[in-house]
Image 1: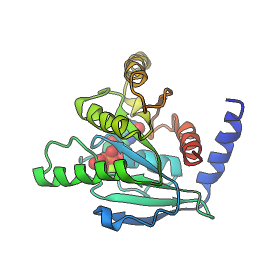
Image 2 (image 1 turned 135 degrees about the horizontal axis):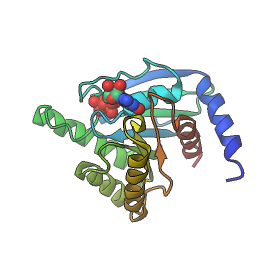
Image 3 (image 1 turned 180 degrees about the vertical axis):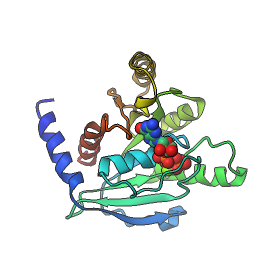
Length: 212
Ligand SMILES: Nc1nc2c(ncn2[C@@H]2O[C@H](COP(=O)(O)OP(=O)(O)OP(=O)(O)O)[C@@H](O)[C@H]2O)c(=O)[nH]1
Ligand SMILES: [Mg+2]
């Protein structure tokens, strides 16, 4: 971990530079050419994927966020750095009960097929809401990633919404789950997009993963 401060600083500089929306892909046939490393943000609807993407890029309205689950319905690609260093992918959420069944099915296939089959995907970031911990749908996605040998990091979101003692407990429980999973990174990152907690660490993790 000797290079950790260096990585934090490099990541800070990278994300302070150009970040541009590239395209929205409603299906796998619309994916951009696989010409840059990709890091994808996955997680249940409303967990805070788009908000985290905005927080790490320091841009409030880059990715659309909403109180209503199901805001993000396509794979959205964002180019980071000039020259292009990496691509962030904001994904539709899973486990969204109120959406029409066929729509949910379509998103699930899109997310799963992308995660399983994308050659330039370096790592997925699986977001877990600190208030709720790991749910059955999260386990389904992690099972799929483990089976496909796609590495992923677990990031806890909305840490500002719970007490420090509750955060410590959910971190411990989530760490115990992660340790049993072959493709999960052992280090968890607690975050708050609202308060800026853990954001520098996520930037560094994304940069590090892009270099794999
Ligand atoms: N307090 C707090 N609220 C947050 C945080 N992150 C996100 N939210 C709120 O949670 C709601 C959902 O955030 P989004 O970023 O749109 O969630 P998403 O995972 O992209 O949702 P879908 O696109 O529907 O899958 C919004 O009202 C955000 O303002 C956080 O760190 N703290
Ligand atoms: Mg979203």
